[in-house]
Length: 249
Image (cartoon, rainbow, N blue to C red):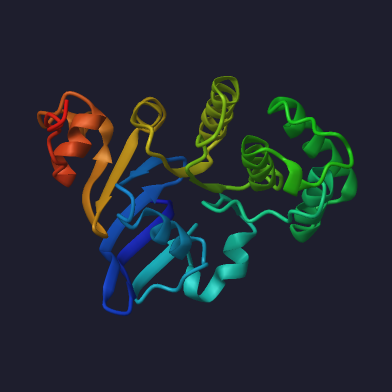
């Protein structure tokens, strides 16, 4: 079995706080996983460990069969990331930033230009040529971060809240891009608070709460256990407080 991602008993502590608690999961190549959890559940910490930005306190992570602790540079050549904070270079223009990213991956300038033009057209990202990234809207920055993540043709793609701040038309375009990538065997992991999006896009679901993996598997199997939809399943697993009447209404 070829696994694109393997986490074995992965934990992360910050002092006395346990952010991720003994998480184990495996994804086959071509999987599309929705990673869910409330704010502070450990989603972003988990992604940062997988991306090599944080070192696990314990456990082992493999990406594309390679041990992250030993082969992080080799792994990063095949991984695309849209991080939570986007991590863009604000005082470059969008095309300059993509040229920098492409050269980091060893792409020829002609290839960078062709791919950047195609991505900009697909995502309808057309700022004035000299506009610096710092002057982009949040939605434009999110589109640019996605362009940078896709530029080198990654085999594994990590997306932290990719639909936040995105208009409906662009959201649909991104969904189409992700479905196409999946059909070509790219492994995708995304976090989102938008349950409807995850339910429609992601055949696999993982639910974290207080750093623990409460549920993992195919959505159809998880919802067969009695929950009518993903939102209901999520609330049941994380123990959400039932809403009541407001005292002054």
